[in-house]
Image 1 (cartoon, rainbow, N blue to C red):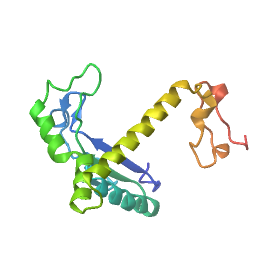
Image 2 (image 1 turned 30 degrees about the vertical axis):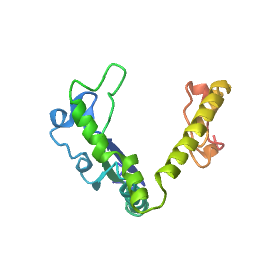
Image 3 (image 1 turned 120 degrees about the vertical axis):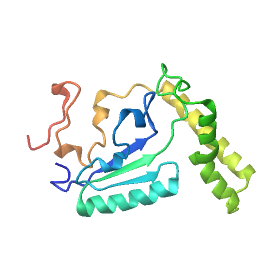
Length: 181
C-alpha cells in the first residue's frame, strides 16, 4: 500500500545481526532485509558510521517526498544481550564482541576522526564527555522528582496539528477526535 499510494515513508531497519539470541543467518532465508520490500527500493548502510547514516537519511527524505517509500537497512552490532534473560555470551564469544567494539564502535570512529583532523584533543573530548554526563545526571535526578505526566500527554506532538487527526487513547473515551467530528 505504501508504494501504491507513494506514501512518504522511510522504513528503517536496525540490523544488529541477531534476533534475540539467534543469528540472522539461522533465522532468515534472505538476510538482505533491505531487499524484502519487493517494489519498494532499499539500500543497506553502515549503521555505525554517523556520516553515512546522516547522508543516507537526507537522500531518503528527498526520495520519499518525491517518489514514495524506501527501506534502509543499517548494519550495526549489539554489544550486550537482548534482555535481562539474555547475557549475550552463549551465541558469540567475548572476543567477537571486543573486536566489534575495537574496530566498529561508532563513538570511537567519530572520536578518531576528530583527533586525526585536530578538531579537538583528548582533554577537550574528555571535557565534552564530562559535561554531557553531568547534564544526563541532572536530567535523571529531575525526572525522578517530576510528577508523572497526565495520559493526555501521550498524544502530544504525534502530528503537527493534533486537532485534525483521530488519535486513539488507551480507552476509546480518552481518544482525541478531529475538531470536525
